[in-house]
Image (tube, rainbow, N blue to C red; front, top):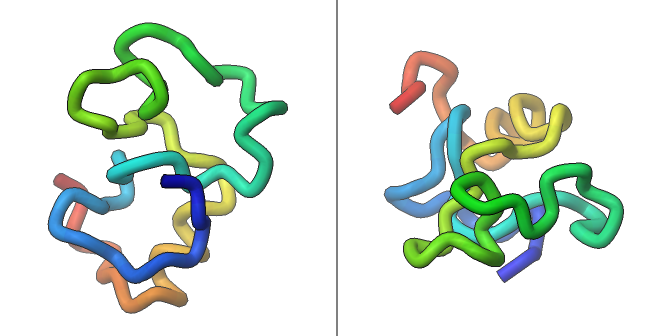
Length: 68
């Protein structure tokens, strides 16, 4: 799951995303990093979203106070 602008889900927050939200995962410095990358974590969660994620999160209707 790599669509950067797919609708927000219950596991998406400013600190993590369900699946990868990078525009080009192949150049992400954390691609395939154990414990951090959605592609290698069992739960499919990325805990290091791209720097642009805060803006995209807001555009998709996320609230900045939701940081869990």
